[in-house]
Each structure stands twice: as structure tokens, then as C-alpha cells.
Amino acid sequence: MRPILMKGHERPLTFLKYNRDGDLLFSCAKDHTPTVWFADNGERLGTYRGHNGAVWCCDVSRNSMLLITGSADQTAKLWNVQTGSQLFSFNFDSPARAVDFSVGDKLAVITTDPFMGLPSAIHVKRIAQDPSEQTGESVLTIKGPQGRINRTVWGPLNKTIISAGEDAVVRIWDSETGKLLKESDKETGHKKTVTSLSKFADGSHFLTGSLDKSAKLWDIRLLTLIKTYVTERPVNAVAMSPLLDHVVLGGGQDASAVTTTDHRAGKFEAKFFDKILQEEIGGVKGHFGPINALAFNPDGKSFSSGGEDGYVRLHHFDPDYFHIKI
Image (cartoon, rainbow, N blue to C red; front, side, top):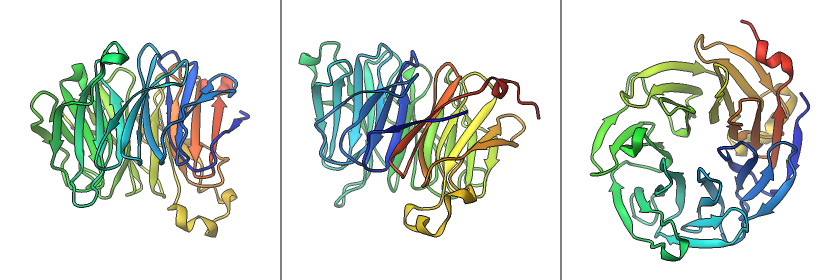
């Protein structure tokens, strides 16, 4: 399995996202330009210019027409995927961190960081069908959790919003009223910052990765803990195969401590676990720094990883991957 090395960012990667068809891959990094690539051969299609801060997160609409990005420049922007033109900018008083389109793409959830005395907040925005009618008003704003909210996604039928972040608690909110419905148990939940959260393709369960060196699989409606995957380094990124019962975790120690490790020590590999047996089944080495982003192609036949080293590595699986036996 030879990876395709995609060099387009000059700063560490922060997020990767495939569109629903799996033919485009969107990447965000700490440089200011989200980039779109062909997902089969890693060719760069174009960039979305307009942010002037690190871009933390992105999401693409179901029809691959709209891209939303959240950035440290205190805006979340809507883009035309095809032309790269900026359609709208949601302005906030603190950096925008996580973004996610609802099912049907009529709503978007955006989280903002704690900043200059402001608490972190979750904002729900209505997305207009016609970009010229787009407004910046919030349908709902939820304030409450302590610390930064690193990831937020929509629950089933857009009835709930799931958030997780620095205080290590996974929370489920009512998306109509903003009421807190459930939070993860202190005993079974994460012990340190939750860095990443990824929903399964059918939206029935989700995976969280944390600096406590583990990833956990949760039921999306009941917030019951289903599985825990333990590794020996902090987890920065998680992804689930839509095809096989595989979970992939990426991480490494903090960027500031990286110079002390040889990349061959295997600290920076993407580790594959059996989703059900919770056992490690293999790893993919290659990055020269911690892995910050992971994404599976919706067809389950390839995955990509983005690292602190500024590279996106695109891996198409060999035929024998589909027959791994434990």
C-alpha cells in the first residue's frame, strides 16, 4: 500500500473531510487556505482563499455544492465548492472551532472558543437555499460547558446536538430548546480533553478520541459506552470504516515534544483496531509528526491522514486488507 503524498499546506493539518460521493477530499490546516483534492489520485483541485487565521474544521453539503469552514479569525465561512468563491461569512467575537451541516443541509452548527472572558458557545445557523438570502442570525445559542468545545455534530433527525471538548465530557443537547439532555458518565467517560469525534456512516453510533490515550464508541441516542480502544499515546484523530468493523486512531505526543522522537519509533502511525474485539490489527506509518486528522472514504476502500508535518497521505488499501483475520 503505497501512499500518495499530497503537499499543499505549509502548516500542520487540522481536519480532513470527504464529500458524500467520495470523489473529493477537503483539507484544513493552520495555514489560511482550505484545499480540495481529487480523492482517487491526490491531485489538487483548488483552494478557498479568504480566511486570515488557522482553519480548524470544515464540512461539505450532501450535494457537494457548499463548503463551510470554521477559523481562528473569528469567522465561519460558506463557500461555493465548484468556483471557490466565498458566499457568506458568519462573524463571531471569538474563534470558530467546529462546524457541521445538519441532515438536509438546512442548518449548520458552529462552536466558538472561550475568548477574552467569553464562554464557549454552540451556535445553530439557518442555511439559505439561495446564498444571496443568507443571514448571520442564530436560530439557537447554547452556552454552558467549561473550556473549549473541540467537536460538535448533529444527532439523529437533527433533534439533538452532540458536543465534546476540553472538559472531557460528551454532551447531548436538544437542538430546538438548547436543553442539556445527557452527559457522559465520569466513571466510564474520558479523563482528559476529547480531541475528535466521528459519526458512523449510518449515524447510529459515534467514536471519540482523547488525550487520555483512548478512544471510546458511544450509542448516539442513549450515550451508553459500547467499546473502549486503548493505545499508548494521546489520540488526536479517529475514524471508522464504513465497510468493515475497523476503527483507526491517529496521534502522537504533543507537537512541542516531537523533536525527541525518531519517526521510525512508530509513534506517529495510524493504528487500526478491530471495532468489536477492541484489538489492534495493524498500523500505517509514514508521518514525521503527530497525526491530527483522519478520514475514511465513504466506500471504505481508502483513507487519508493529515499530520503536524503538513502532509496529507492518501492510502488506497491493498486487496488483502479486506480479508484480515484475527
